[in-house]
Length: 149
Image 1 (cartoon, rainbow, N blue to C red):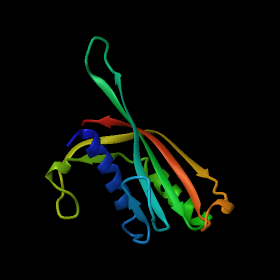
Image 2 (cartoon, rainbow, N blue to C red):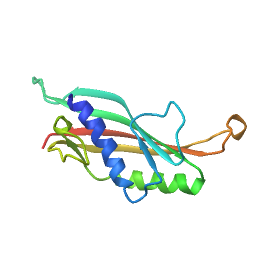
Image 3 (cartoon, rainbow, N blue to C red):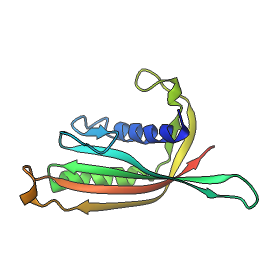
Image 4 (tube, rainbow, N blue to C red):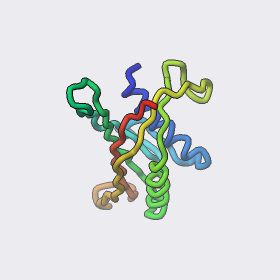
């Protein structure tokens, strides 16, 4: 499995763990393309970038851009979920070797980490005339660097 996929899965499991005490919130590994329940949080890798790090070297700094979408039934629910995720992203996100297996049956070994360098939380307006059920949305965009400790 590529390190980028391990990073994607690690962010997904980081969010799932964040909501362990809130089992009514569903965490999805991609933007929903079919029916889903409210409230839900989806995480999607948007971009991977590698930038030269040292002059005259092949060493690169790796950046990952992610989008975390929040779907809620109320404004308060949207805001609480959004602020919880936004503040949790101040922590380093451990990246695990999922070639060894997946939680909860296996605890894979740590191979790297993602440090969030930029984050942005914004609300998305929903036009109630265009949807059967009124709901509230927000999106968190992050840029993280790979930290191979």
